[in-house]
Image 1: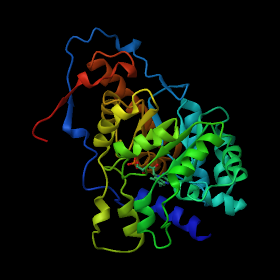
Image 2: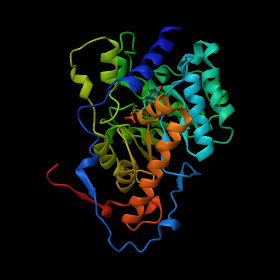
Image 3: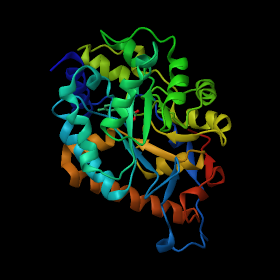
Length: 341
Ligand SMILES: Cc1cc2nc3c(=O)[nH]c(=O)nc-3n(C[C@H](O)[C@H](O)[C@H](O)COP(=O)(O)O)c2cc1C
């Protein structure tokens, strides 16, 4: 296994077996729902259907980009794909950079289309790979290998700086994103990987013409910490807790986003309360990574299905207790800031 494949396997192992979370929280506990004792809504009439990038999904949850490129990734991607096909949920594969240099890794990605012929699937490439421009043939390969419905560019300067052989050049990424948007036929989504997108960065991305931004804020998986664990360091490093909490990202960006692009809330989404609060704050859909790989690690497909069913039931309960019939009814008026937190 080459260096990138080994790193990807380490990431999966660390996330599924260790604690690689932020000390700071995503910030959802700062808000409480305002209970509606007179909801005037019938529980059985509630619909969780969500429209995102011109497609309807059964529930406002995107399974975040995670893996691919090594042997252990294939069954994980196959399970995520089969699950998303069954429940009509959108998902992304992990960074496809490795398959550009090593064709033997392609199966670990293309398996998703075999398992999910009709699901919404997003490609994934790092912003650093766009800094010098990327050949059209390479972009086509990323997209065609999984017949992708969108392409996600991940921004992860913190993680790169904490990796021994990580990328060190970040200039040129913004123009690389702008070119990509003009070049491809599918929507371009830009995400962080857990340190968050600020309002200023989101404004720049909107100016580049991206279709959606995923804030991927701090409070969930800490990539500073993951790399610290990989470096076998017992010492806390300040980057373990570096980043903008997810709630701050969502609230700061909802004005910049308005109707110009769609907002995905992620980073520390750990249940339906977090999903519902994100939608109240202006996100169209929420996304989650760590709970998905943990559920698969502990229980395979059935584990993931059980997690989803419990989240779906909780989400319906929340909608009902707020007097809402559908996700788009969620609004800031349903939240109250908790002063003491
Ligand atoms: C095992 C694992 C691998 C990941 N690999 C990628 C990746 O290749 N590309 C990417 O954009 N994000 C990747 N991520 C980051 C997630 O998509 C997500 O942004 C981040 O983990 C924060 O979400 P969470 O707190 O729900 O885990 C990965 C996450 C996990 C858990």
